[in-house]
Amino acid sequence: MKKMFLIIFITTTSFNLNAQVDINFIDKVDTSLNGQVKYYSVKGDLKCVKNYKNGKLDGIVTYYYPNGIKKKEGVFYNDIKDGKFIYWNDAGEIILEMTISNDSIYSNIMFWDEARKKKEISVEELTKLKMN
Image 1 (cartoon, rainbow, N blue to C red):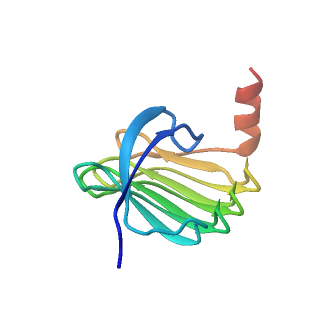
Image 2: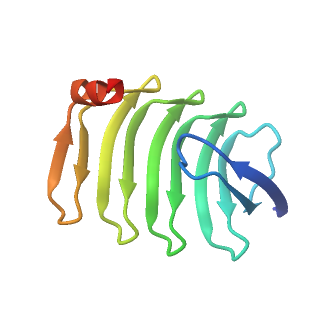
Image 3: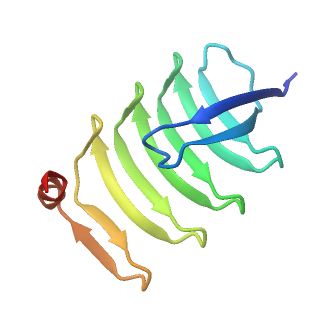
């Protein structure tokens, strides 16, 4: 039997740029955090789906807009970003895509401007921009 628990927490991760206080419902009770956990808003909208192994993020993590469209998705291994990360706008169009390996950007970053023109920036260019 599934039980609904109310959890209040503050989301302050690098995966979410805006810190916020929110209330979420979890549809699975598992204190060791193994497997998939779904987080819902107070209104019942699916906010995100996270996969855990031994209490650490492990697998695909997906966030959703209130309209149900994917907002961002990335792969974690043992609580470390390690795989493809994709960001969408609220219309469902990809706006950014990159590969991260061991918490560091590994591939060129692809992004799409408002006119849907695809652009690319290399890891080297990004490093130079960060240093300035």
